[in-house]
Length: 476
Image (tube, rainbow, N blue to C red; front, side):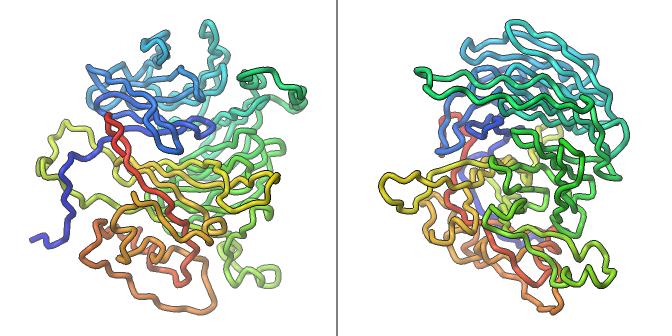
């Protein structure tokens, strides 16, 4: 007999098959059973929607903030064959071109005028203009995830794809990305000069991991590269110019599936999210104002041959996405039919935004910029998170915050997270939730270990605003 508490909702659950940001995190797209929609990232606003009949989409990739979108069919009843990429002009509300392959499309990446398509064992690059022309093709190792990353800033050239050997990365230098077209009257300042072209060979190899890759990420400039493996414990940051390892960051100790890595626009911090439901934030430079946590044994590593684990860098801030797996609906069926599309409720995607700081500044001075995180869950949750250093002075949370977060039971900030090893062991009791909580406690053993196994809680990101998305009427 199941005696667990369940929260009851009067609306059907949101089914989101795909959610992704544009390269600048100004907008994001979602695909559902009804079609796809485009939202402004912050403040959250439904910009436009398209109801598509006859099937579903597995991916909707925006080309910056233009009207051009790349669509890929997927799900139980795909709208388009999975071996095709559809170029959709939303200003015309119609398909303008299509690319057909002999196998299923695994992944997409785009920048101004360029599109890269990942297949099972190769990556094909196209130049998109008045016409679509094939630029080049590179072989890779087995790439079922469709991994690839493309630098999107003006004059950037880097395309990162898996190498021919497992765990290796190929760096391909494409022609420089054109700058965006200026809007409004011409500026009096001259445009910035493009950087010099790379002098090294256009394709270089980085031996990043010994196991299969799980994510590839580059900042808009393409100067750095973040890689993770199937083990899900380490994040490695590489210099794309020299191919050298810059930083090695530790997410945790137990195995996890890392969903993604995102660089802050100024490349001073990086955030990582995984199937553990936790978003980790790491500092990459001392100029970020925060420092990563390290084991108290780390000062001894130059003198004592300790394992490399004790010299690891751990995230300085975390946030745990609430689990909604125990939510039920009044009008939902007790069991899903075998042909229904199933959405991973633990999955999310995270991006960085820039907002004006709320601190009072002197008149005439430039308003400082504050970097915050936007987390999108595949169940329709929109979270705006402030970093501990910037949110320490703010104690108020938006009125749209979930009841379980506003209540004192169990607060997300009270949940201890995984921490580096310490010389002293302190046992912590597992926090218990009261009857007012609407979020279920995770039952997965790995997630319980990550939550309770270590003694020193890390600093938590501050939830500034919570909303819902995924409804065609702009609900939330």
